[in-house]
Every structure is written in C-alpha cells, then in structure tokens.
Image (cartoon, rainbow over all chains, first blue to last red; front, side, top):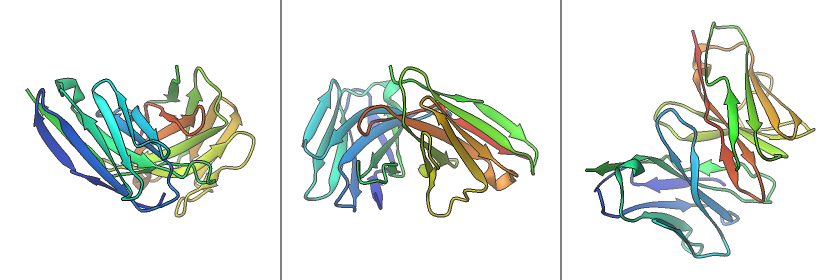
Length: 114
Length: 114
C-alpha cells in the first residue's frame, strides 16, 4: 500500500447509536482490507476484514463495506456499547504482491457516551 | 486460536545497550512475521518483514544493522535493538500471518531507553 487516509480522528456517539469510520486508499493493487481495534497499552485486535472480491461483510454488530472503484472502505458498528470504546485502525495491503506488510490509517478514537 | 505472544512486555535499558524482543505464534506456524513500531498517539508503522529461514526485508528508512531480525523457526521471530538510544523508545509490536493475508498481532513490547 501507499497511503491510507482515515476519518474521523475522534468520534463520540451515544450508547446504542451507530458509528461509522471511513478510509480511503491510493494503491489500486490493494486487495485486502482489515480493521483492528486497539485498547490502551495493548496490541491491535483483528475485528473484521474484507477482500477485494467482496463488497460487504458482516459479523454481528460489525460490518465493513468496500468500494473498489472509489477506493474507499468503511467500518460500521451498530448498537454501540461502552466496551466498543477504543482506537480503531483501518489497514490495507497488496496481498501476494510481494510487499504484504500492512499500511495503516492514523486511527479513530471512538468514545461511547453512556 | 491465532494467538501471538511477545516477551518482554516492558523493558527499560540504558543508552548504548542492546535489547532483544521475542515474538511467538503459539498455536499456528507462521512462515512470515512482521515487526511494527508505534509512537504515542500515532499509528503503526511497518519496520520489516521476517521470513522463516531467510533474511528480513526492511522498510525504507529502517536501519537493518540497528534492528536485527532473526526468524529461526516457524513459531519464533526476534527483534534486537542494538546500541539503543532514547529516540528508539517506542511500542514494538509483531504480527504473524496465519493463512492467506490475515495478520494477528502480539500484545506489544514497551521499550524505554534512558
């Protein structure tokens, strides 16, 4: 990957509401897009991922959408809970292209207000 | 499944000394492991790709003589920070690739160089 932009940098939502985080990328060869949740002082935890041959993927309250034409992908969290508060990172890579390390966005600090 | 451990979790050392950090995949074999660095309130930056039985591939700007990587087995990669200086203080995180492109991260190692 080359560059990943992530918005917003901070997102505060009321408990029970939905949260949406968006990322755009520049490398047209990118084909794998994971999302990670990182709590303070811990390593990132994979929460969902999507590959370029799929437009949407859902896992309970979490969903990811991918628009390859526009080069953007989004994380959707519904029915937010206090334990969802963390920093979320999008990432991308050109899997199989020889440079398989992940390029990360700058992160979104999600705050769930009780 | 897909558990990655790191040791130590925290290390404090004097300037000029060397520090070794271990990364282990506990329940799977990983032909490829990655090392990332994360400064406070910033994103993760890929430092190098570690392939079992071969030399590591370093990202541009990362000194290979300063950050020595050894991937001697399918479950262990080590990062040695040689002649550490205060500017090397950071959160070092490894990841291991299980299947295809999915990367699982360790809990990180907090390095403080005095």
